[in-house]
Image (cartoon, rainbow, N blue to C red; front, side):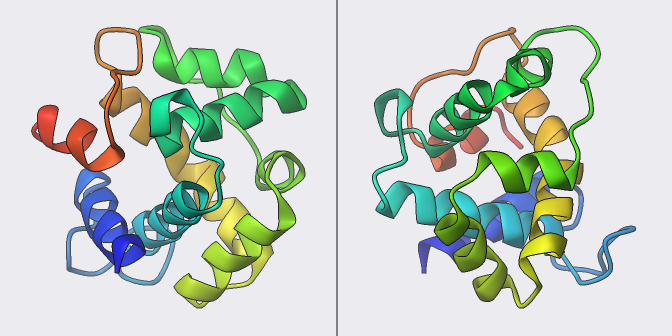
Length: 145
């Protein structure tokens, strides 16, 4: 399934690979939660930004008052943190619940994982200071991540 593929790609991007997870607990948990969320956004019309679910997610965060944080991740400066509570507030409940269900965690835990991993993922996928076009899988492969 696409969510699992995205989870594997993001898990590798985050250094989780197929082995044990880092501070998050479950193996590749952050990548799996983020992959499930982005997969859900692709299927739910939340892709935005030319069908790129990551661009759509950043657009949602921007509209929810997290523009400074989102821009810091894409830009070349230091990444500003975001909290799980902010992520939960910014995302549609259904998308977060689906990502949590597919990852086997609570929506609160999913929001916390997304908050912990999203800044690093966006930063690595936008080394030139802007998010390239294309699908998320293409972005990851183009950056050799």
